[in-house]
Length: 72
Image 1 (cartoon, rainbow, N blue to C red):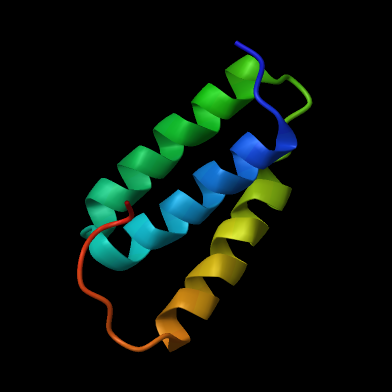
Image 2: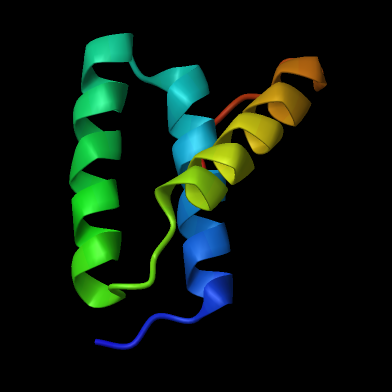
């Protein structure tokens, strides 16, 4: 499976949404699985860049007014 940079960006943004909506334990378990998956499909994958994207998106989402619904 070949993932592009855009795929990784979408995954990070989805995880930022999950950070808002999941309980912390479930979020961290999912994050750990996704980091392992991303590293498997791309050995050059950089955790720090991915985590930075999640954090920036999370902070942006926290400032938005209340939204109903999930990520899709």
